[in-house]
Image (cartoon, rainbow, N blue to C red; front, side, top):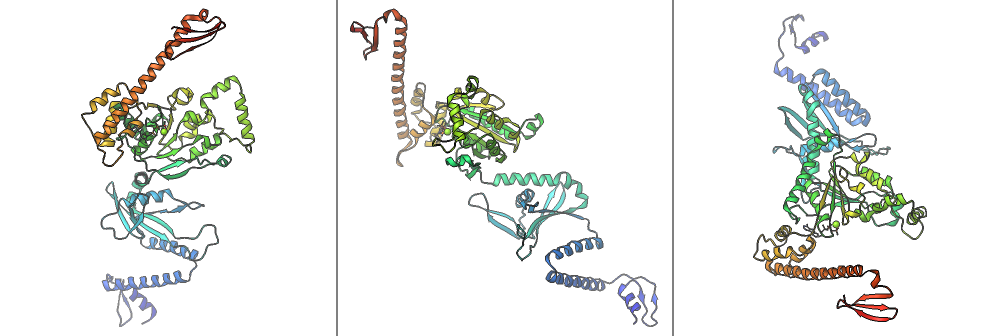
Length: 546
Ligand SMILES: Nc1ncnc2c1ncn2[C@@H]1O[C@H](COP(=O)(O)OP(=O)(O)OP(=O)(O)O)[C@@H](O)[C@H]1O
Ligand SMILES: [Mg+2]
């Protein structure tokens, strides 16, 4: 059999007459055996070639083979499918790809019950494993009746040590495969949908953090400070805050409306942030409310210690480092900096005090501590300057015990949008605390307590302390009776204080009424305990009735 004849035989498209060596031009289909034989021999050749390439080719060259082999196969058998790869690390500096993390979270939520290769890690959520798909596992997702297949693959890194700064590690990537007819759907909405859902899943799963910039180290004032973090684990919630129920509901509504108003803020052209000013006496629940806000909205908390911030530039830097879905808190804003007086000083010109402060900043080696150079305008810029819009979805909360001390510019609406007064405990607030601390919703002693609340001012912190059982045997009634005792004691003290104040007012009134004529020649005039006056005159000492 000559070579031409043999070639004809291989092709299988023409029948060969073996006796005279002529080809008969009659076509016949290949038999199954012939197809299998030819496919398996082709595959065997390819596999053999591939194993040689893998073993002997350098890493870089191997990748080229892989790419061109893929292209070649696509040319021979054009595939109706499109593939998109999302790599774990991107960019020159190999930063972690946010899209990869979002896809990872999205797919971990889509793991079907029949997924066989999963990966378990201790995730950020406490005491729990988080499951995700393992390498080469495939997940099928259905979106708007279209099917999408996701696979986690990797390009193996070279075993040798890389001379470059970044080690040549395995490059993991998610591959999305879909039919080419869904190309538009993927471009228009599917990828956006995956990204959005993935981000939300990550936010909900993460353990929230409490950041602070204050370290108490005086030397840090000369360096630039950054946020340090711990996990945020405050258990406060709006259910446990004792305050007027209507007011509480109003605050909850306000917060929830804010968190769901992304489109609204975009439409009206306002940065997606809101300022809250919490004011009231010490121990009325301002800090507790901030924790409850963070828990309600699932936000991180940035506790900004203004006195540790060197200047306005550093304040801006700290702001830029904050993330979305967070509350930036400045506690006791009236004590943080002398905002209250800055304007007055401006009007009067520079005071000695200010000059001294400047001197201290210029000469940091001096004994006295260098004070922060953050100014009122710097803080105003922080709240609603152009940088404040970066990040989005943020609350800025100020707390103060002295509302009247703050510069009106700092707390005007638009900066501090909602002013919330937290005040002394009312009877309604007491009921919440009693339920919380004693698990009692109603009791025969409540009537007496209600009566006492009409005359006594007590902070929720004091009420809470009184209600707290002091031993394990102590029942609710015992705590309530002790609380009544405290209220009565406080009432007595307040009444006495009031009597004293009244008497003082009365005295000054009498002195005013009697006028200068009575005081001629008087050296001193002191009231004794019985409401009479000792009058020291040039001529001697005498007693005077009111
Ligand atoms: N309204 C409240 N409801 C429930 N508990 C409260 C309330 N107010 C205060 N407390 C309790 O009192 C303690 C002190 O409250 P918190 O620190 O929130 O007061 P504050 O207003 O921030 O005080 P300060 O002005 O001194 O910072 C908290 O541990 C909290 O348990
Ligand atoms: Mg506080």
